[in-house]
Image 1 (cartoon, rainbow, N blue to C red):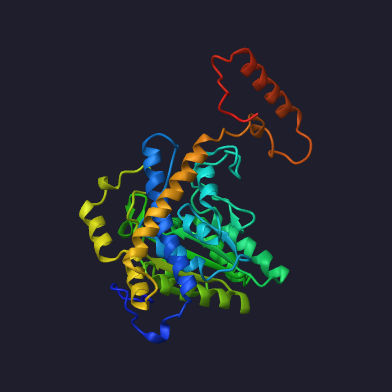
Image 2 (tube, rainbow, N blue to C red):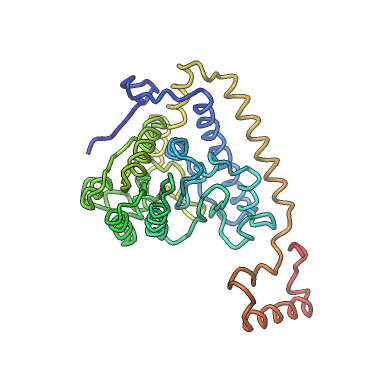
Length: 371
């Protein structure tokens, strides 16, 4: 299956008819979001290494899949992410303060400290909370898309996942559900070359992930995931088809995971460092899009230097503020478990917890927790 592109590696438009001619405002929002995500990743990855947060996952090398797709969506569209879609949420309006609060699991975290870092969610921005188990968001997205169809709302669902998740049974169940119910769901596969440590050559024998959609009778396309404009065009067209024609679409975005899988991983154990450095030099999505913007007269070296300096300062400011906020109240260990009145067993557990904290303060220091 061919790969759709708009820009070559030097940021030149291959076919002018394919240039979406996005406004300067949209182009700069996409690019600045890519730089912001990159800077945030660097700071929070180092913070985990210093023991200041417990876990982190970067998106180095995959920024174009985030911003290109996010720019083609509306806030009415429902997003189901995996755990490498922070840029999509950022583009939709999630603030640096909110990112930091979640990664610190402090009292201002929307999830009340119950989730691991990078497991973001926002009801206001229609971004469903991330789940750790691989692939669980796929059938959820298919069901959500069917609900949207029944409601008659002018919106779709987009579900992001890695090619590793496509080996899970939930992937096949989700595509079949969406196809047979003619639901407006965009399945967006980030094929970044590795399922943690497993390279694609050991994951499948067929023609990638895109070819699987045809077996379910779905429109399918493969796109250069490091080309922000190509990703934008593909998602915009897929969204139109999904809503107007009420059918799902499978998108395979070919990209590369430059960073380690997570802070619990050392990718040098299963891939040569030269492979990573070669990708950075030859096909950086940020560098490619920057060259396009420079040719359009939208961006300069001076603006690049100033923005990188200012955004790093802003991130560090929010980082320092989040670090000072207390952890969520111990009450949240027992709330939101059941609707309505707490059952007797939770009442007893809470009472026992409070007794232990009161009787043995030397063992249970709760001074860092909100009242």
